[in-house]
Length: 445
Image 1: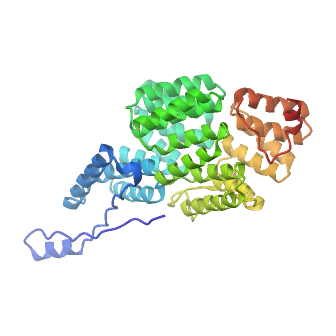
Image 2: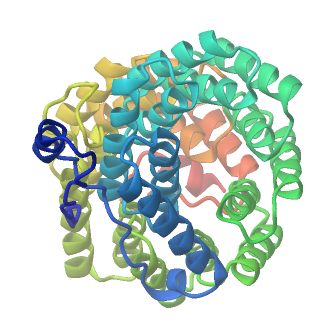
Image 3: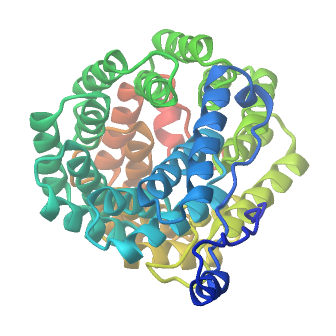
């Protein structure tokens, strides 16, 4: 990943007294992180021009007055959004964190700064720190809808689902909008209400401005809900509409790639994922490419892709394992990456590290269950899967994995029931071709 580019500023010489001039000459302002050029479709259109103009204006304000903390905070927020758009989290999260910490150093109770740092912490998967910051901000302004959304996100990721629901409900009371509806959607999905999740995400899309990244992200998430329900036509329509309103949108391209994969058109799926990867830096595209290469009988490319995923995640990773350190916590993602690379010991190591951070999160429990399953440690897998199922989530992959684990533990009726439910949730769902566990049920069909 590229490192931040820094520039040095000359100190202004003001005042008439020699003593004042000497003090100002001794003062050195920290360089302001710069905006990086976008690439491909992201560099086309008015949005990029507006972003460059806005950032240039804020940087000019800071050049004239380094103590303009409002401009410093607005620049941090612009970089947070640029991180979302480009996927260059390593650079922009660090840049935004530097700017917001400079504000908090002078204004430790600045509500906007606390919220902005909470957003960065959550982006970096420092969920405990994100919760602490959001709680501090909520104490300052309990009637702000945005901070309730931050509380919701932190509680979800830590597995505090009742608290997350309360925060989401409060957010919708204060300001029902795209951000509020999308959180309701995710919570409904977690608790097994797939139709309700679709309704809420559709409200989020309708509440957003067509073409903006946040709106099209919600449209892609709506498509994903349709996709996981086996409804390929509305899923494809959502992805295509997102591409029409936001040309070159990488996550919509990835959605179309999954649709092509489901239909058995692996060549098209690979092409679309490569296009997405060229636009946005996201390891998930290479992770999906790994599976596609295996399905397309390209083992050499699959192995190389799996190793590339590991390298990307390690490059993003937090190196000191401290909540206030820069860098992402990527252990859950690394656990799956090492599974695909065939390194079961490293997979378990990273899964356990993530579990120690947030043992109540159902996705983390599922990861622990699946790693133990792949290691033929079926009793351990069953223990963690029980926790992963506690919210009644109906995700077909979760149900499939629960079925595999139950069958390996001799719970044939329950295992077959989970596998059937996975297919009922998504008739297009395809079992792992390398896993012989559900072969009995498949044969009966």
